[in-house]
Length: 544
Image (cartoon, rainbow, N blue to C red; front, top):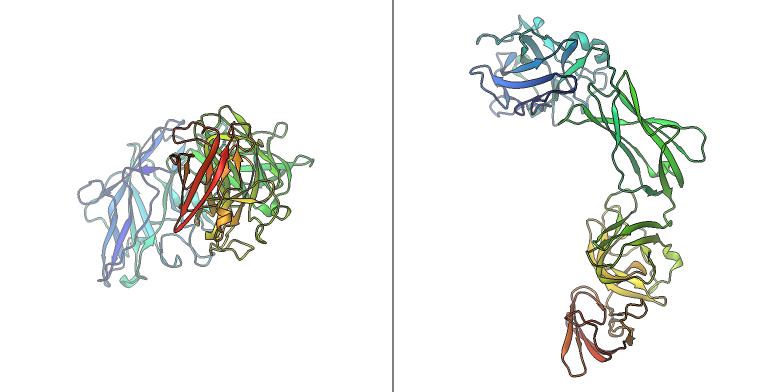
């Protein structure tokens, strides 16, 4: 258990005329409410001079004629119902970079994490007189704050870290330090001080283990996978273990999970373990998680009824359902959460709930364009689905070193655009490149095969639509015209009388509707495409 004070605290010490500071980070914050065991510990930081609450600990100006320093603040520990319980104080300098075998107790230099000065403490049932201090003569009566990372910490913990519990429910704890000849390496110092309550009574209550929901139940074999669970107990969690096997295997293997205590709720822990993609293979993983508080064990899932997770080939289809109210369909690719392909459906884009499928395609098996194959491609279904309004598509590409060049190619990522394959050739849909997330985003009006290719400079014939006649009746066949333009552009559609019926900006699809959302009458229409200094015209027929 980690207790918290009413105000965050830091230790500052001035060294010389440069006024360098020794800063100490505490795990202290708001007071704990009563736990399930019915006790609480509150830690306050107060000034020695006026007993007022403080937010810093100040040792004063360091002088060369003095070696011992007493903090100008003390800690007031307030507690209740502490029968069969102990309070311990220690530091956690887990980021120490010095020799591993060295004592790492005290304050450590932030810039190198290799230099330290000692930290002493004494506890009393009441406040001490104003002239109370730490000196060379009294140093032997003070206790050195131990660090939990010292090799012999477990054996010496009870002897060196126990705080005296008083019948009045209050302990006053003073801090001191020692700087020989007033000298220390200048800079900012830090440590993490922990107040821990240990329950000595037998623990008869097992911990609670609950799953942190994965955002999907299937993963690809080319991405890392993290197994997570939340553990809660009325004392503390000693360990969490993942037991797992592939479905065809007979025996479960085990791996210890990393425990992270919730600072806001010290009775809650996050258990987590991550498998690198090199450790995974295709198949179904069965697993369960066991939490142990040192007395009792509880499991999430079990050997008879394990939790199941599917590891897919990267070319396996992924499915999910989207309703008429809209939503997001996401296919995770690679190790980073940013490596994802997404479809974003606005409300009303589909009439009824549909089951969407996405299958990554082998680009080498698809036609190339100008000698270049797609850097990523997917086939989305159900085939022939037409949307009532465009949806947003994000296709991912790989640039692991963020040098602006697509991995495995010499392509500049800025040239990438969304294309769809019409069965004969790739058609430019445009789109916007996000160099931070390595995605290209654009709007699409139907399901088909989509890919990322370099757009290059469009020729006049490539800008014109290949559709000569469209039949926008919603049957999924020849329902729209697509123009080969992307970026910033404008398309205007005119009827035979020269009246403009539709203006389209930065969307190269015309679905046969006018500005009022009505399907245009059968006939021949003129279109004009303006992009930069280029103006391209042509005609297209509409047949109902």
